[in-house]
Image (cartoon, rainbow, N blue to C red; front, side, top):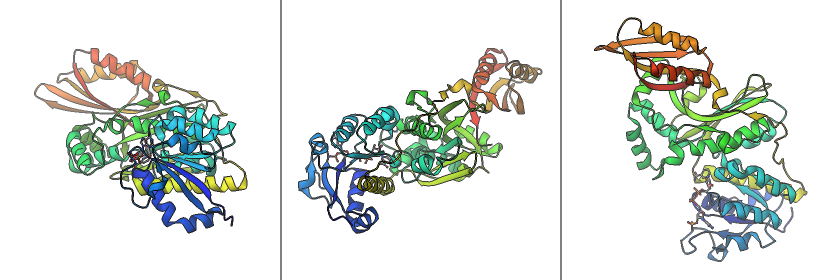
Length: 429
Ligand SMILES: NC(=O)c1ccc[n+]([C@@H]2O[C@H](COP(=O)([O-])OP(=O)(O)OC[C@H]3O[C@@H](n4cnc5c(N)ncnc54)[C@H](OP(=O)(O)O)[C@@H]3O)[C@@H](O)[C@H]2O)c1
């Protein structure tokens, strides 16, 4: 074993960073044996230097992250600050000064992954980010390496624990959205400002990263269709139950049937209770991958939290250190396929539509005609009358989102349709 240590600069020592530092210390001997050289924490950049940090020698703490990554003797920079800046500049500077980088930063990777990979490539350095998607769950490496000989057609996942916790609460207790969100906040599963989670921004960043890797195609954050879950109601769960389904906020990356284009989207969807993703409870994450040769694979586990996320960071750290010692780098960006990334209109799926209609003869026929005129075939219809008004629940066969959009627009114009109470996609069948 080499005795000269590999030097690690830790940028950020919060929820994730403090666990990275702890495991680096407590597992130092095992890490050294697995890597073939000891790893040494050479500096820790934070915002508030006077904050007490257990196990971190004060002399390692600095507020000058730029000076730390410019030192020239750093082998690996671990970026767990989060956000776009200064993380992006620090990572770029780290490559320019000879370090490889491990990051957990989904927002940055989704926005600037291609540019950062390019800088890493120019300098012959590694950029690893297993922790950026679904915390502890090995997903980036399996997609990038284990499935490199296969053809991935679909990635369907629950990649945000906060929203899964809220939806699971609504499902199991009949609670409304606000009540379930309040409980998630009280238990620490939701942040004071839950927008990034409940509006699907966090999941969209992960979808962009997953789609890019799965389809060997650059998928920008703007390419990902995004719909949050704040409008999901207890009534939607009741409808889902009647269909033998539950509701999950899903990230869905799909190759079109002709194989020439891909789509990426995040939205709430009904999935059958028989689908493995339906049994993912609480704040857990799971990702279902379908590929030509392997068939169906499911990756499941804790998608966030200090120690679980640090596990993924440490796995990357070991891999990058091994590469460093053997003078190689791991796989960089793979975007050779350059498939067209289509918009939401091209997505083909099933829909569950609840309409409030007048309770009189001929309404059903009128509604059915509108569906037929737009080429959307109906699978089932359920009608319930109440005091001169009625609700009509239509479940369609597979149709394009564009066709469904046209159908709904036309339905809204019918005198007999009082309102469209909800539209929910049905996935996983
Ligand atoms: N938390 C999770 O469960 C989880 C899961 C997966 C991925 N991630 C990702 O991991 C990253 C870190 O998340 P976290 O939850 O650990 O965040 P956090 O608890 O807020 O910690 C952020 C750390 O960065 C430091 N920092 C902030 N601005 C800085 C600056 N300008 N220069 C130097 N240090 C700075 C903070 O310093 P102070 O300590 O002085 O405030 C803090 O130590 C993010 O990219 C996040 O998306 C987190």
